[in-house]
Image 1 (cartoon, rainbow, N blue to C red):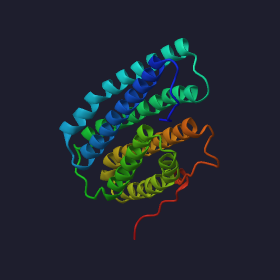
Image 2 (image 1 turned 135 degrees about the vertical axis):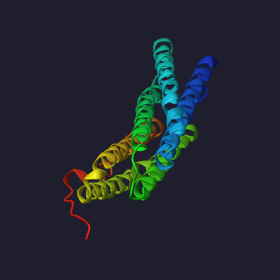
Image 3 (image 1 turned 90 degrees about the horizontal axis):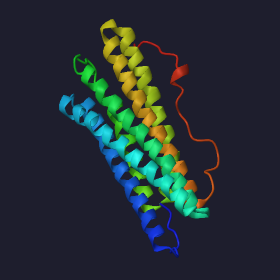
Image 4 (image 1 turned 90 degrees about the vertical axis):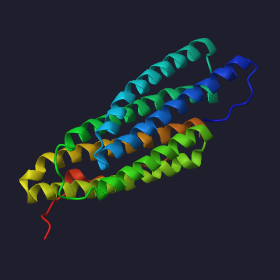
Length: 239
């Protein structure tokens, strides 16, 4: 988070450091959730999926703790300028992190159902998407701890790559469903999994935008890069 000048009230500086620590702790927990969720799908591992579901309440508890901490800071310290941006940014970031945790849990739950079916096709596209989502999430969480505006911009600009992979994966799965009705159920679960991962990427981008504003005091300019046109895709059977 942004560096701040030394405060006259030393306890306020300590409270801000505590807030940064809580945010990075929550970010690390969410990052682990997403990694385990991807592992559960690709390795068809029910035990790992169960760990993700068990971890999600910890994320929710941290969100509540941070919210209460922020309310206390706003009420007692009445921060201004850079300090206010930092505190409000933390509140917004926790909301995005909590949603990412929910999406990871959804992926894990879907994987438990998916494991009941045999898949006559590889999950290469999903693996690539999961890898890129995890990279962006790790980069933006590290950027929070390092107050790295450049890294935030990098995450913001990378979101269209995730959307492009999702678009290609959407077409691929629909094609499998058209070729063999037996693929409809497992492919439907994979479509939901892919959409959850795409949403993780969107929330990582939200965090990047919020972090950039907290550091620079200005919003990222221009439209957010997007590459998702799957809703308008014309799907043709493979030859």
